[in-house]
Amino acid sequence: MSEPEYQNFINGSFVPAESGRCSTLIDPVTETAYARAALSSANDVDAAFGAAAAAFASSWRNTPPAERQLALNRIADEVERRLEEFAAAEVRNCGKPLELTRTLEIPQSLDALRFFAGASRALEGKAAAEYLADHTSWTRREPLGVVGQIVPWNYPLLMACWKIGPALAAGDTVVLKPAETTPASATLLAEVAAEFLPPGVLNVVLGDRETGRAIVSHPTPRLISLTGSTRAGVEVATAGARDLKRMHLELGGKAPAVVFADADLAAAAAGIAEAAFFNAGQDCTAATRVLVEQSVAAEFTAELVARAGELTPGEPDDGSAFLGPLNNADQLARVEGFLKDLPGHAKVLAGGHRLDRPGYFVAPTVVAEVTSEDRIVCDEVFGPVVTVQVVADEAEAVERANDTVYGLASSIWTTNHERALRVSKALEFGCVWINTHAPVTGEMPHGGFRHSGYGKDLSVYALEEYTRVKHVMSNVAPRSGQ
Image 1 (cartoon, rainbow, N blue to C red):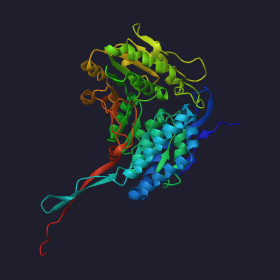
Image 2 (cartoon, rainbow, N blue to C red; image 1 turned 60 degrees about the vertical axis):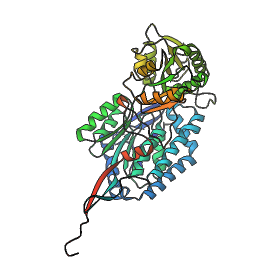
Image 3 (cartoon, rainbow, N blue to C red; image 1 turned 90 degrees about the vertical axis):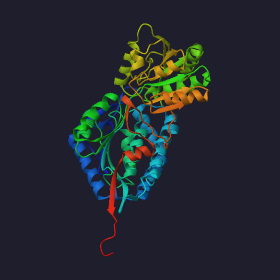
Image 4 (cartoon, helix red, strand yellow; image 1 turned 135 degrees about the vertical axis):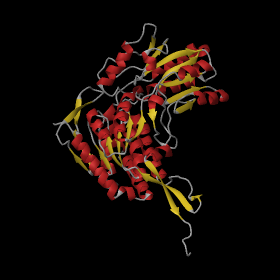
């Protein structure tokens, strides 16, 4: 029996890559090939952008917000109706635990689509008024046009919904590229969306980094949205600058979790462990650097190690599994490289190794006695690894937390309200959680500072990024003779 083949979705239809070339997809649970996916060239990208540009000009840009809302809600309803099919596709993509995918990730994807459906009807702007005598001014928020979007392999469906939601709500048309290893849920989403959108409004192009480069360098898109590594973000921003494309970049992270002596240590350890190891740590907001006050460091660390031992890896249908494998062989090699490269003074308290079984599984890992200069503390691992450092007081905790090039997410664990307010102000991260780590909600913005990129996902801030602001002024002075 031949392997199934995932194809591009352009102008309302599935089509193979023009060249006929395909990549082979590897199951991260078994390390065996299970399907093929179109490996698209610049010609395929050009066809997708041509379809998106035609759909924007002919229909979607002038579609009333109420109709966009209806379409997005219908897409969400159909995804929900086919939830088991989408869960299976996402598990096929990533090897994630099926139950967590079904009960957490897909509902969050639906929520994003439904939030932007409603937000499409609530754009804001300054009141029309006579800011200059005899002239009335007002502002218009208009769609940008065609946008290119590139999503990562850690949350393929969720990130696709975070991106197409605000774009379609704003009246833009889309060319979306999923990661090379995870095309299943994105192509299924395109198939569902085609039932409710005009042809060409949402196009999906499969391929590798060269395909992504063709999207970024194409002259048609007015905005490129990327969720990926900082390295990829720098490359995309540099290429897009050549024709002044707008950029929306959600990049890497190295999130600190600051634990003060007055915290509920058991709750902190449980919350941080879940935030460190969920999705096998393949999350740019994952809790990766614990900074704990010296007086409770030993007690807290023991609690964290115990929790790490309880959060077990397993296959998708293992109901007791909290995390699955890493997504691909390259990522496994990267994580193993960090663990093999640990300095002599580092102490592995839990995990620290690949599991002796098929699949790209790494045990939940806790590393202590590290310094802020160590590679495992400075660089994003993107695996189930968390480090523990001891700090003397609040001032040192804030200093070490901010001692990073990243600025995406952080958390504070304390029962002192005043301290929580002080430290949340002092931390230089786009999100600061207090006595929790990792929850997101559609109404609140998600995005970072510095090497974690710029621009916001979720919330009305994301919707606004997919629009442009136009000032319109009318001379309303009485005409002569009137």
